[in-house]
Amino acid sequence: MTRKLKPNRDVGIVGYGAYVPRYRLAAEAIADVWRGGQNATLPVESKSVPGPDEDTVTMAIEAAQNALRRAGIAPEVIRAVWVGSESHPYAVKPTSTIVAQALGIAPYTNAADFEFACKAGTEAMQAAIGFVGSGMAEYAMAIGMDTAQGRPGDALEYTAAAGGAAYIFGPAEEAIAVLEGSVSYVTDTPDFFRRAYQKYPEHGNRFTGEPAYFHHVLSAAQALMDELGLKSEDFAAVVFHQPNSKFPQRAARKLGFTREQIHAGLLAPVIGNTYAGASPLGFTAALDEAKPGDRLLIVSFGSGAGSDAMSFIVTDRIEEVRDRAPRTRAYIERRQAVDYATYLRWRKKVKVH
Amino acid sequence: MDIPRHWRLHNQRYKLEGSRCTRCGTLAFPPRPICRVCRSRDMEPYTFSGRGTVYSYSVVYQSPEGFEAYVPYVVALIDLEEGVRITAQLTDVNPDEVYIGMPVEMVVRKIREDGERGLIVYGYKFRPPLTA
Ligand SMILES: [Zn+2]
Image (cartoon, rainbow over all chains, first blue to last red; front, side):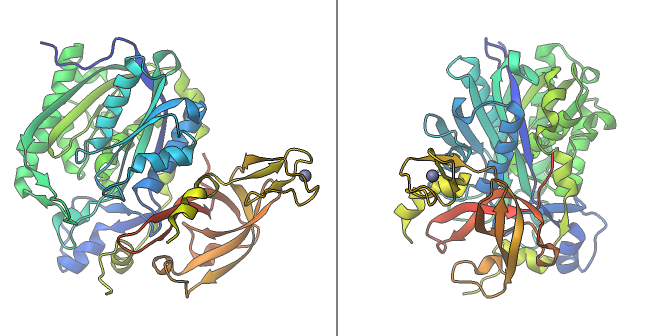
């Protein structure tokens, strides 16, 4: 039985684009309010905060524009716009049609919103790979984007952040990174959930670690490496879902990856957990620094629970397209600190009537 | 809120789609059915690049209803590089950082929300350019 998912037709990434909002909230600013300043064990240094006029739609539009610039193709040739998020602005009304309209991809395109907690982005990527791989479409766009929310004072508030990335998949001959293979690994694990009409999610505290994050991430990554006959040293860079600074570093160690291999794509310490955006965004930072011939691994994690792992080989075309759009680091270095009160107001955590 | 009107304007608001006179080349934003220079009715859609500079601006502290969430914000007259002047909100900038002649680029942002239940209106705003 094969565990690998790969289309018969060779497919790759032809364009990619990142987005991170300008604002940052220091974890210490939250600890000052909720822990009397006790900040010995904060999960990240700071997190990205969306401006008052930003949401998953606006952030997806900018990331998608960056991906289009790098791909250098006409928007009308894209046959699918799939947006993975757990913070779609509407409960009913697709994010994807707004993105498709704003980019000039609509009307002759498939459009849908994907959901699977923090795995919704890579899930959309897998689907886009299949859409192009079947020959049904020449190009398909997949986006992972979130403006995550944590209940004030909850452990999640330190990390719940905003950002993500867009990918355009197309024929391998035009790709900047060609897919080698992928694996999806899912089980019914209730580590984190949010019921309908609830604003904030529930989580199982310690339960979120071993049986959830580590089990799925390690299983998917190991299965893919086994299927492809690869070892950790065969990869130039690897990007894991990053709910905090520690988890991806521990997952890397367990799989035999070095600090150097995860460095480029480890963004959580300064921008927090961008949920469905997290591993796709980290992967854009790895692509920004990749050299032709490099092998890159991305492993997502979504609560509920599952992981997608994908391996890509970077091509010569990366050098040509990389600087057609802002690099991920340019977004991360563009930073303006906000205080806790401003953050509460912008994120509508203050009831005014 | 007038939903059909918002729907009709989506390309104008999301893509800065104006008009170009096919006879004399005059550009307009918002789009016009008749050319203001040669009176031709032969107009075609024209998408502006979204790059420009601040011609003038003012800081809004007391907003009209529906824009309270964004106060204080900057409303600017912007000279697009194609030579057309438009009015738009600036974003991702502190009011004290804005100056006349400041280069800006267009982004799509939330313009307003019709309460908790209604439509979310998206459209163009301008910010200091994030260069590639
Ligand atoms: Zn004319």
